[in-house]
Length: 274
Image 1 (cartoon, helix red, strand yellow):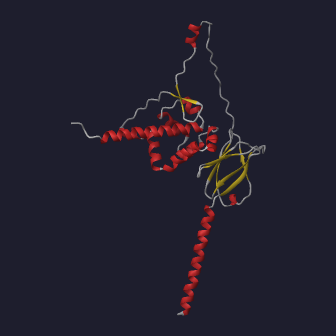
Image 2 (cartoon, helix red, strand yellow):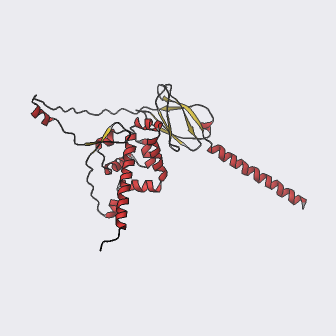
Image 3 (cartoon, rainbow, N blue to C red):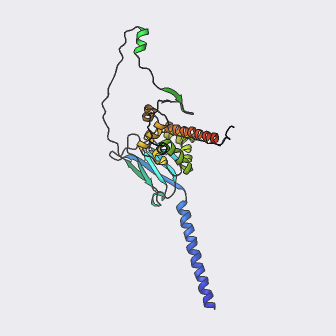
């Protein structure tokens, strides 16, 4: 009987130790640490100051210093995006090895330069105000402002879309956006955080690659363009706006569309007039 008791006691100790080890291992994995490193040019090894470092999981961001160094909070399984204007961005999946305290060297490759033909058009003026003013092209856009942003962007006429059935109409990108944020509120909160925190606002104001947005919205570049067209943003805005302006625009589009849908639902609930 005593032998059986001793065996059970030893088994309990082993199980307890294994359980404790599992908890310790899990807590160690989930522990937030600092990821330290330097961003450099892959060819000439020159430090890339003002590179953008974003933790896509926690929506935390930082910018490299004048020597290309950075430090950002991260934990195992987080994904870090590293980008620099004119260079190909990379994403890093964080492992235990990367968080051991050693400085990480991240080398970015410069994007190939595309040379495009430039067409310059001039307007002939004759010096008579009443006639010359008619020759100057008029701005075809209505200028509006996004809250908190100094720059302006344009709203133009949305392209006409022909939907063959009511089902096809429901599948337009703006409906996809509404359903996406409804099913995945974390995505909505991440975009909202990008525009609220000062450090992140500065980073997104200097980005024009749409990469973070495509990551959070789970869209490719073409789908993102179609979404903005359905939200009635002009081609000029889609091509020229910063990522911060784009985030503001999409969130505004979502809020407006949500209000419209809510209004339609409430009107449908009203009792019929006799």
